[in-house]
Every structure is written in C-alpha cells, then in structure tokens.
Length: 593
Image (cartoon, rainbow, N blue to C red; front, top):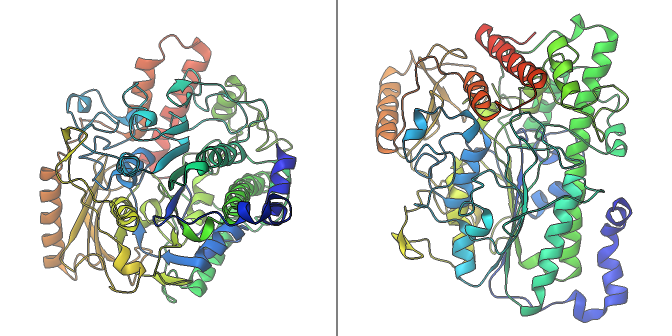
C-alpha cells in the first residue's frame, strides 16, 4: 500500500502516456464535483498556508488556487461542528449540543440533547443525492450509530465510516476504554480493517475507489473526507516523523512565537496582533534534557501525521487531474475545532503510563507514533498549534473555535487571497448547495418537516461581490457545557464557566485582537450588555439547557464510562477512572503538571 502511495503523484503522467486522451480528458459536467476535506483537531497555524513549519504542499497549492479565510469559526469540539457543517443548522437545534460521551442523563431527557443528528435536519449529502449527485463518505462520522443514524441512512450512497470519537490509526482497536471496539461501518454494515491499514492512506484509497466506480455515468459527485488526523492517538509512519526530529527542540514557546510571525507575514492575522501565554503552558527550560527530547518527538509525530495527511490528499488531487476532473471540482478544507489539549503533560507519569500499558500501548521514545504506540501532545504544544490564539479544543477562546478554511475552484472566485470576513460552520452547506445549483430545503424534505438552514451563502464573498456575509448587527451564538459565545460584527462576547473561568463575560474585538488579550467590557459596557442580551435570546430560542449541579466535562465523561463499562476488567476500568479524575483535578487548578 505504501509503494502505491509513493507512486500516486505520477498518475497524471502515467495517465497521459498509457490511458490515452479519453481517460485524461473526461467530459465536464455542468454541475461541479465537490470534495469536502475535514481534518480533526487541526489548529489555526498547523498548515503551511497559515504559518506552519509543517510541510503541507497540497493544501498550499489549494490555497493558491483558491481563497483562505482568516476569521472562520466552528464549534469547540467535534460532533457539534460536524452537525453544523453538514446541515447548515445550529448544533443545538440539530440535536448535537455536545459529543454524546459528555452529555449527562438529565440533559438526555431533552429531544435536542441526544448527541446524534436529529431527523429535523437534512444533510448536504441527502440534498445533493436528491439532485443526482453520487455521495461518498470515508472517515469519521460520530453523529450516531443506530441503523437509522448511520451515514448510509443520511444521504451517503457509499460509505466507509468510523462511528466513534476516534480510533487507532494503524489497526482496528479503540483508543480509549470508553469503547469495546473501534466501530467501523461500510455501506451500513459492520466491517473490519485490512492488515496494512493506515488511516490517511486507507481513507483516500476508499475515496478514489468510490469516485472511480461512479465515473462511468457522468454524474457529479460529492466526496466527504473526514480524516482522523490529528486526533488522538497521534500516530504517523516513521519516515514522516523523522523529517521533524530536531524541529521542536526549542520548545513550545519558540514555536508559538515563530508561528505567530509567519501567520502575520502570510496575512491571516493582523501584523501587530498580540498574544497571551496560556497558564497551562509549562516551563520548557525546567524540563530535563531527556524529557525535552521526548516532548519534541511527541510534536514531531504530530507534524508527521499532518504531512502524511497532506501527502495522501495530494494523491486524490493527482487522480482528479489525471481524469480531467480537477478544474470542475470544488475543494473545501477545514478543521472541526482547534487542537486537542487533553494529552497528559507527562505521559510517563505513573497513572498515564499505566493506563496506556493496560490498553496495550507502548510509549517508548523509539516507537512513538508507530503501530502499537500511543502518542498525544500536551496543553503546551497545543497552545503553539493554536498560535497566536488563547485556549484550544473544548474551550471557547479563539484557539478552540477559529480554524483554517480553504475553498478552491468555485467558478468566478478569486485566487490566492485572504478573506477577513467573519464566517461560521453553518455557512458551508448553503454555500456548496448554491455552487451546485441546488435549493436549500424550504420546510419539508423526504416527506417530513425539516428545520431551515441558518447559515449564509458565501459565494458573493468568494466572487468578490461582497465584503461581508454578516451585517454589523447580525448575531451568532454558541454554547458548550456552560461556556458561552456571541459573535457580532468585529466583536465577540465570551464566558468561560468554572473551573476554566469564573462565569463572567468578557468582550474582545477579534478583528484587531484575535489573541483576546484586551478585555473591552469596562470600556464598552453598553455593547457588552446588548451582546449578552442577544446571547440569552439565543439560548432561549435554541433550547440550551442549564448544566446539572457539579457538572464538568471530564467528570461527566467518567460518569458515562462507569455506566457503559461496568463489565470492563477491574484494573483497566479503575485506572481509566483514576486518569480522568486526575485530569479533572488538573483542570480545577487551572494548570497541568
């Protein structure tokens, strides 16, 4: 499989020489093909077009052929983002206010708190399939695993999908004791992975297979490719990791500063944008040499995993070019949220290392990131991945919610530019529908009532016909486990609930100050009051529920695991609980050791 991957970039030339002109110049449909690529837990400056040191030439080329968004936001964790991206409806209305693993039993009593995609919304895939598109999904679904919740029941014609929040990238095994197994489904039925599986390679292989199989009838296709990279466990082939050995020896503070400078130079943040140093960032110099060496390799594996993802995405691009389909294929690339920060600060600590061992994972330096090993990055390097922003995944700072967005090959759009206008996760579905000439549902679809899309069509932005998709008084609200956000114009009101914050509101101008370094609440109290009132209206109209007393993200995860895993072997079960409770204690103290 790896040899095939190395030869794939030669496809355009092989196709031209051996397949003949007919294979290279397939007829062009009037309607565009669509490839929607969703990375997992990729931070704002994790890819080259946004200031990264990680080599991502495929994404760089797509950015040159298209446009980069510098003010695009998603939910702060995965399933809620996926719900909005695929339906154009706010995640609270779409039935996914949080990942199901973190919902409390009391919350689950409400219809919109099931953590799976509601029947009240219709997916982009269903709408495109209804208009004659082939629809394919290869990768992470995480929006429900009951028969009527599978992607094959929500508009996808061909699927090879992971139901869980994550899984091993080398073999069919769960990455956490929450799951009995890694739950993969092919075309609606449980399936098994091949022996030579590596996630990024295999998912592109299946995408190519699906597209190839459907080319004969001349119908356009919609291919949704949600990669596992770079979700836990962070794993990469050795040859990719080795390219970054030594790159991160200077530590996380140096990386955060370097990325900010390159992001400024590339135009995705203002040239004078300040940033704060997160209190969860450890002192690099206080670590001994062996620990610094290990931490640097953790990040090298992360970089290798991203480069591997980009390489295999490049195989898809080469395939489409070889078939004469690239110019008529719209590409969208983004991430579901900011970088993951729940990897233990010291994976060799007694609890974390024992947990990995009992799950059958190796954490030695030599094997880090390879088959059978478990790897992650800590809050310190996660802060660098989100540079220059504050916070990360599961938090409502910009680091958790502002992510890269590249859109390429929309007819009439500009090329190589940066769009500074605010945009939101619900905007992707209506934009792609408009590009395909498909009407959004008007109250009913498939014989049932459905909610209207609330997102904006971004085509006028892409084509230079408008400078903004949202007016200065338009509001976008968002909530996650008591954390609240309201976006309005250049401003963002933000509330972090305990233990991360004190539950009070702060106000930032995220156009001038995307790092959220200057709280304007005392300078502009009237603006803040109006925005908080708008947020309260959002909560009421979207069915946002108050948190149960004593709720915490990690604590609820532990509680749900206890209910689901009572038959777990005692030692592994107790160690899992201990790890999660320890993490909860770290969060209460506001630091990770």
